[in-house]
Amino acid sequence: MNSDGQKIAVLGLGPMGRALASAFAGGGHAVTVWNRTPGRMPAALELVAAAALSSASESASEPAPAPAISIAESVQSAVHAAEVVVACLIDNEVVRQVVDGVDFGGRPLVNLTSGDPGQARDMAAWAASRGIGYLPGAILTSTPMIGTPAGTVLLSGDAAIHAAVAPALSALGGRIVYLGPDPARASAFDVALLDLFATATNGLLHAFGLATAEGIAPTEFAAFATGIGSLLPDMATRFAEQLEAGDFPGTRSTIASAASGIRHVTAAARAHGLDTGMLDTVRRAIDRAVAQGYGADGLGRLATAFRLEVEPGRISE
Ligand SMILES: NC(=O)c1ccc[n+]([C@@H]2O[C@H](COP(=O)([O-])OP(=O)(O)OC[C@H]3O[C@@H](n4cnc5c(N)ncnc54)[C@H](OP(=O)(O)O)[C@@H]3O)[C@@H](O)[C@H]2O)c1
Image 1 (cartoon, rainbow, N blue to C red):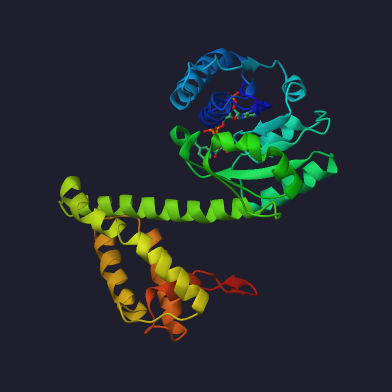
Image 2: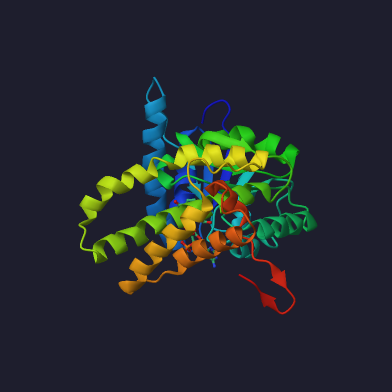
């Protein structure tokens, strides 16, 4: 353990729990792990120790000491062994079940389990009702990036708890970002970014399906598809500026033009028997914007067109 090392308990040894435990151990912290299925712990521990040793060796000028990692037989004993408790389990309901009835004795619980903003608020209220100092977070990067400069974790909630756990959490990566006191803020960023990931990834996969149905080889198609991907960073910045200004110039392309284009794509996909649900969603948003008189605006305006108007007895499109 280095001079700043702390005692950290990691609850959950799935792929991400193992990556967190490795990063903490590699960062010089003493780690105690607990997992529901005890049989998985020894094998997981070997992986964790090997990864921790390799990351500690990479960053040290002298031979790195063996990582300090141990197994706890129960959640309670893991918590007792630690100064900071980190949970990374399959969902928030499981976190609640696992720590319910456990005496934290003033130790903070950092919950890095994914969930939605409503759950984040409920969990924060639940932890407060049990006197547990609580900080939720959202992990934005995959397991190999944890503990590296690219490792990104968003945190939000109680500022004093954040200040207390921030030094330990810095072992998780180069971008550990605190977003303020609202416990749902980290999760809000997470779900919006996952929305982007899910729709962009499945948009790409749907396009491979259409290209293949049209007899285009995937590699032939990819040569052009990569060009579309490279437009996204600039669009993200430009649309953000337009949304904040409330001004959507249609100088590059217009929503009216997109209304025509989406129909060609949908017709081609439907002709091949592909599910056009994603395209239909886009077409409905475009049509709503046109119906509201925004046909001459640029595409950034469409960010405001996905909300369904709820009327008594029906959801309109
Ligand atoms: N993997 C990634 O790349 C990644 C990236 C970002 C965020 N995350 C988030 O990190 C969290 C953990 O993900 P993961 O990849 O490690 O795998 P996971 O499959 O989501 O979670 C596995 C862990 O949950 C435990 N678990 C499942 N059901 C349980 C129950 N009823 N009671 C107690 N423990 C239970 C498992 O224990 P057993 O071993 O006993 O089944 C294991 O420790 C998730 O919220 C995930 O969304 C993961």
